[in-house]
Length: 386
Image 1: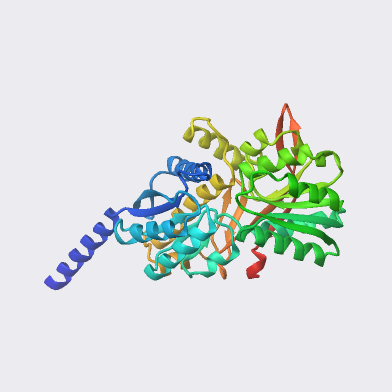
Image 2 (image 1 turned 30 degrees about the horizontal axis):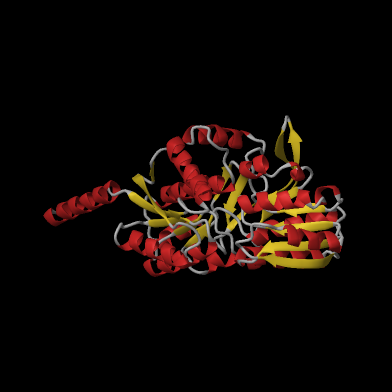
């Protein structure tokens, strides 16, 4: 009897010690450098969830440790992930604006059997790097396949493709072209612009000379899009009757505010824009505004950061606060929840996100450009893995 009492007491102390230890989430994102605004969006999304829902889940407190990768620096991301796991005792890794950084950190998570939640990096192959990786953003293929289907369905037949020359851009080119040609359309020309391009005039002249009825554009979000739209208008393509087909990011506040009059009438495909309707998004925007003191509207990285925290908290509730990789990922499978973007689900086979992709048209309303949803493709999986 005495041994039973002692054993029960030791178990009770162990459980109390476990509950007293916070769940440490190491978030690696870009807080300085050219992608600092993307990192700020992601961080603000995470902070909004924490402020709205509290800093605990599964009976344990949550502690978020932010680390700055400074941009697309795979070696830096791998070092930060290693330090978070070994020195800072992070239980979960998360964040990642850039695909190379997520790929590098996934190897660390795999060796340590730690869960890794991708909140932006969009190359399809990331979730194949480890069984402990899941994602709350999107994949490039997931967004461009519906865009290509919609473009052909609504009359486009001859498309010119221009993408940034890096992994996500190449994914965009491959899956748009493959889908559009399978539907019966033709790709009449293509170009891959170096990632550091600041003047797109020469590329846009090639598009103009090819006389397509539509152009598919994939560029990194933010300033590259603004620069492209300036050249697009300067070359007169906004008046040439060429349909513009863009991906995620073209409906972000900074692009809409700076892109100029050439934005009128362009089409984009993506999972989130701040102007989308619905009570969940209205609540998110209101709380996000408090987080950033009204300095900027949330974009898709903010929504992914917010949903990433929602996934982590719901999973911890299912595991009773356990964070080891196998238990966490078993609980992740089949996750489904309401979100500012609509309903999000995690595929039980691939651990990747399943969601609605919206087709949006950008027009000026009340003196400002706004993205309005005109079509939707529900329950879209990553086509690369399905």
